[in-house]
Image (tube, rainbow, N blue to C red; front, top):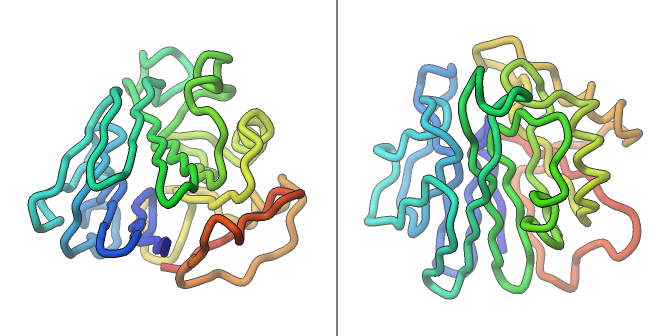
Length: 212
């Protein structure tokens, strides 16, 4: 499996010749939108920084809400959640997605705004090997809230997303705030994360910072 980050909440997850794209964004956020073919595209919510499905070619399975899905040997579960801490009254709803790829459980939290997950949400998410979590605040959770949710989920690998990088519009906090909050040393950003199930950490949770 190879994971690449395009910025914001957009990742490419590739397993063999199967490609998954999460939360493709448009140019309004200040970054170049993702391009290329995909077989699966997930959208956490209907905001322009997360639902630019027109930039993705091919005939992908579009998943934009809760439910159970399966294609090309990959199981996907969409879980209902909120984009804010007031039960959606400010910014509406958000879909959390879990993927089972090559025996590895991946969870993408989208633009989660809840300061703490409900027990029911944690149960639906289940065991997580790789957690993609927003950490930059503003319209989603910040570093402190992200750390609390990581403790609830207890993944093997954490990939922070939705934080300030050069060119990005808005007032998101930098990833360094999150690294300080969670007690992780400064990380050299990786262009790609390539791993198999046997490569997963067996004890402490590892934080992986990615480069656009």
